[in-house]
Structures are given as C-alpha cells and as structure tokens.
Amino acid sequence: MTKLGRLYSEFDSVKLPDDLPYTQCSTWELQFLYLVGRHHLTGKDRIVELGSGGGGSTYALAMGLDENPAFAKKTGRLHAYDFFRVGKGTFASEKFFTSGHKPEDDDSFLDDFRGRLEPFLPFLEIHAGDLWKTSDPDDTSPVEFLHIDIAKTANVFKCVAERFLSRMEPGTVVLHQDFAGPRLPWLHHSTGALLPYIEIAGPPIRSTLAFEVTKPIPAELLKRIAADDYTVDEKLALIGAVQDRVDRDHTDGIPFKSVLELAKAFVCHYDGQHKRAWSIAKPLQTDEYLSRTRADHFAQLRKAYEAEPKVSTVARLKRLVGMK
Image (cartoon, rainbow, N blue to C red; front, side):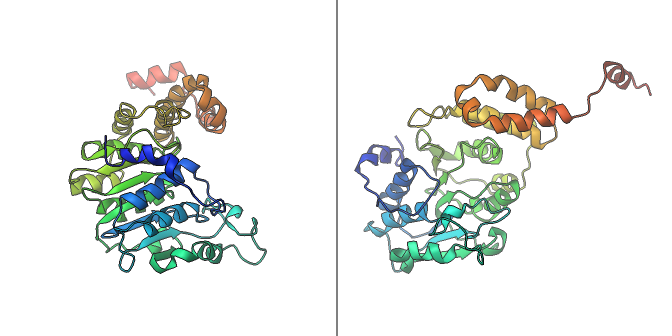
C-alpha cells in the first residue's frame, strides 16, 4: 500500500465543520484533502491548489495543515489560484457568494473567500485572476502538493502542465479532482504518460484520482505533455494504460473504465474524427452510470457525427483509385 493509500482507512476519523464553505467536492474528497494536509505535507516546497472556488476544498486542506505539527506555519504557504469571480469561461457558481447569488454590481467572490478562510490567512497566499497571468513562468521551485480542479479546457491544462506539473519531483502529491470528466481527456492521457514515474494511491476518491511521484520524471516527457505532442492513437493507448490500473471509485459508484472509454471518444472528437468518436461512444450508452449522468455527452458526440458530411461509396471508390 502506498503512503497515500494508508489515508483511506482514516476517513471515518475526520470531522469537518458543519458550516464548511460551499464546494462542489464530495465529503470524501474534502476528508482526503484534510488528511493529506494533516499527515503528509510539510510546507517545505510549494503547496498549490488550482481552482479554489468558494473555499470548501481550501478550508479542508488548510484545516489539516493548521493541525499538522510538521507544517511550518511561519514559512510554509498554501497557494490558492482561481478567477474568484463568476462569468463566461470561469466555470464558477453563484453559490460561491455568501448570499448564494451574485450581487448586481460585482461578479467577484474574492472578499467572500477571504472571509471564509480568515483563520488560515497567515499562511494562505491568494492568486486571483487568469492562471496564465497569475502564475509565474520563471518559478521552477519544487511543488510538494498540487490539487487540480481548474483544467476544464485544453488551454488551461497547458498552463497547468507548463508551470506546475513541470515542477514535480519524487514525493510530489497530485490530486486530479475532475478525473471522472470524460470531456477532459488531457487529464487521462497525461496520467497515462506519467505511469512509469508515479504510484496511484488507490481507487479514485469519488471523482478525484490521487497519485505520488516516485521516480524523477524526464524533462522531455513533461515538455511533451505540456505541448500536447501525442497522436490520437498514442492518447488512446495512454488512456488504455490508465484503464488497466483504475477500476471503480472507492465507493463503488463510478465505473472509471467506462468513463475513460468515453474520454477516448472525446480525444477523437476534439481531433475532428467524429465518426470514430461516435463508434467508441455509441456502445457505452448501455452503461447504467454513463446513460444516467452523461446523456449530454452522448448528444454532443452524436450531433457532431450526424453533422459531418457523408462521403458516398462511389466518391470513396474514386478517391481510392485516384479518379476525379
């Protein structure tokens, strides 16, 4: 069992506040964040949360750090990154506001966030705004912990990979909170590329996959991940490698092999191979979990396939023999 894996047995020992800030993370994910902060981290290197949202996950992690005698509060810092506002492209909810809805004259919930995290402000460093602007491209300091709940687009993941994954070293802990999201296949094939250098903690904690870096990662591999320098077939193979290692989540509720198979369809979809994408996705409609939770995903893939110009058999034969 991995060091992180030992934390699974501690879930029942965690008592989080009843008035924890609103979050889209499950109770198990919050408990795991607390346990990592309480028992695993020191603050010697960077502790980073990408996508702090309303503050629930930040609070759970900070609470663990605050109770951790090994965490150096005077020098250690928890770095919280987010837009801290609602609006197009932010994927934020108005529930992140204390009142539960956005004020008419302000779309920022940064003050609400600071108020909720007030007990931990002495060691909390907040980075508000676009990640490309708030992260430092010249910062190469090692990252001890990385909670990724922000990589909703390929462009943002590129920033995450260039400026944060590139700083992983043996001992670095990474939590991918959106690992159950088939529309985010970059999380899955990048993890596949890292498999020789990491240990997966155990079954995903609901939608979060946790792993620890156990071997130095070649710089060229990290650059390749950041550059998205993989063919479609290579990405599908890398996701397949993760399927060989990950089955259902620890509550037995999410069938990750099926989720990752649907992620393969989105690899093809984003590459414009809509027929191939639908051929992967169509059989998955019989999966109970996916049919219940991802109907919009299937509709998106089917619509793209049906809108794709169809090539007639005659035209295809002419193309094959070089005829005009």
